[in-house]
Length: 115
Image 1 (cartoon, rainbow, N blue to C red):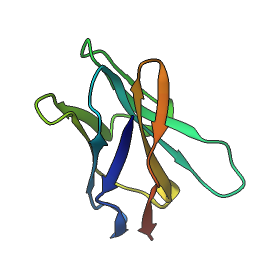
Image 2: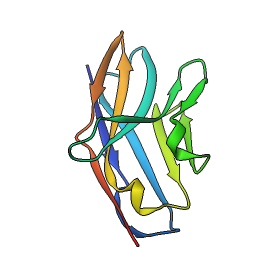
Image 3: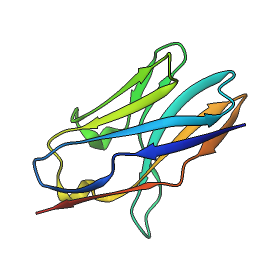
Image 4: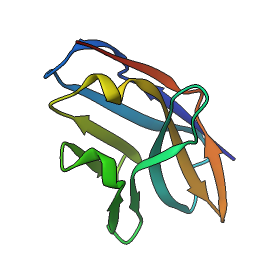
């Protein structure tokens, strides 16, 4: 069983950048995908990006090309580069790792973008 470990959140001014990372702890056997979602209190979780073992990538529609997901296959670590941040990006960002058909979730990392 894999446990995602997240880092990189914080407070940033509008227009700034952050890079989130999601690293596995525990078993890394048969990781199929690593993805990011975000959630604002009271709102649904929103898919930000996912990268799969076949290197295919999907982005959520709201990121408008500002976010880039990448993967270090040797480390099974995924990164979410977030550029040109706006206050609407403020949310808790959760990483998930899909392993053997199940999603394992990180604890979430807060991203706050000030005006």
